[in-house]
Amino acid sequence: MRTYEVRTYGCQMNVHDSERLSGLLEDAGYVRPVSGEDADVIVFNTCAVRENADNRLYGNLGHLKPFKDANPDMQIAVGGCMAQKDKGEIIRRAPWVDVVFGTHNIGSLPVLLERARVNSEAQVEILDSLETFPSTLPTRRESAYAAWVAISVGCNNTCTFCIVPSLRGKEKDRRPGDVLAEIQALVAEGVMEVTLLGQNVNAYGVEFGDRQAFAKLLRACGDIDGLERVRFTSPHPADFTDDVIAAMAQTHNVMPSLHMPLQSGSDRVLREMRRSYRSERYLGIIDRVREAMPHAAITTDIIIGFPGETEEDFQATIDVAKAARFASAFTFQYSPRPGTPAATMAEQVPADVVADRYKRLSSVVEQIAWDENKALIGTSVELLVAEGEGRKDEATARLSGRARDNRLVHFTPGDEVPRPGDVVVAEVTYAAPHHLVSDVPITGVRRTRSGDAWQARASGETERTHGQSSGAPVLLGLPTIRG
Image (cartoon, rainbow, N blue to C red; front, side, top):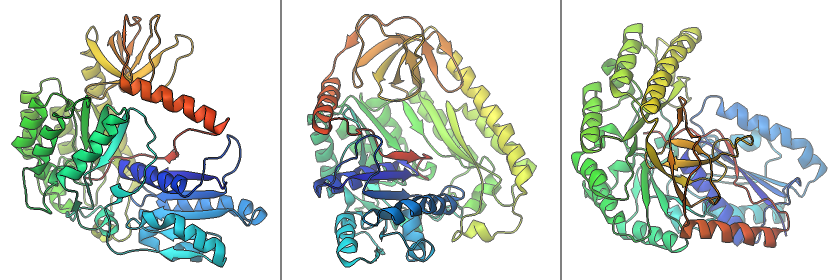
């Protein structure tokens, strides 16, 4: 049997696409390699959003060339946003690549690999639009207890810094019944947490003309027995309506956490970014969310050094960050993306100025996050025990889990050691800027169907693979979905 490895760059949508790529390959008879052995097929699922994405891709392809020369039967495939953008350029720059496929045709990968092998020539297939919603494809879920569920793909916005709409296309929405059927099937398999995905997730329903479709979908998730946690990413502030806030607050299994990109606190910069909201509206949403859910944790994305950003603009971002009191913030130094309007704008901010502002903002948001975490010392938090998340402290045998508000907590197990997917309650004894710690041993474990599913999968993979790697595809950088 031929073996495969998927290497993933980019956002949560790419991670979920990689689960589909893995499912397609395994459905076609491929397996994962024994630990330490090279794969017969290596698939790069690429991102075009992060800085120097092309340099990283072509650097990795160059690293594989000697292996390809030594083993001509090895195959290399490149998909995702970079493939959609560069198309045949990838084969020109790296002629040892066998397959290039785009964001709209991931389902073609097994056929393209076989065609390249039989014909002994590279195959390039890039569709201009989505023909079939990818959730209909086989999927190898990387977690037994938590799952991504795509409710839409593509984006109708025209943010000047973002290349995603040109690579993912216009927004396409799944019908609510299809989404709920997938979630119900996942719960039947043992999943207890789902994250609803979309480039602009709260615009869901625009394609079939229902502006309240996203709020209705959240409420419908509350009627699914066994589904304990529901999250979503990434919403756009311009589409964030009060019916969504009410659905979050009133639906028992929708978690009190919200990741909502700010991008800039300057209204002038937001106009230049074509972000159709202003700082007052953004802070108003946060105020209403906290009024409905006082303990909600709110996180964000911020871009520093957008073309023309002045010190006054930067200070406006600092002011909004202080007012919003984010539980965490992903801060990015702006870098031009070919093909975006911002890349050709005048007044590109000097790199040293951008780096200085990035450092100053990071210091502010980290201190705020630390203060917010310190306020939780002495409280008890319900944790969904995680697999391979955070860092195990061998000296104290700490495990890790996610609180309902999505904070990462390292905790000390008691006599009964929980499995990934089980639920525990821990007392917070220490706070750091990016995580919490519980040094008090937990007193009980709620063993769940999700924990059973994890245990069955772990046992089954050990028996089936006899040492074969059962880890997730390699993740190479994970920013949030642009929104």
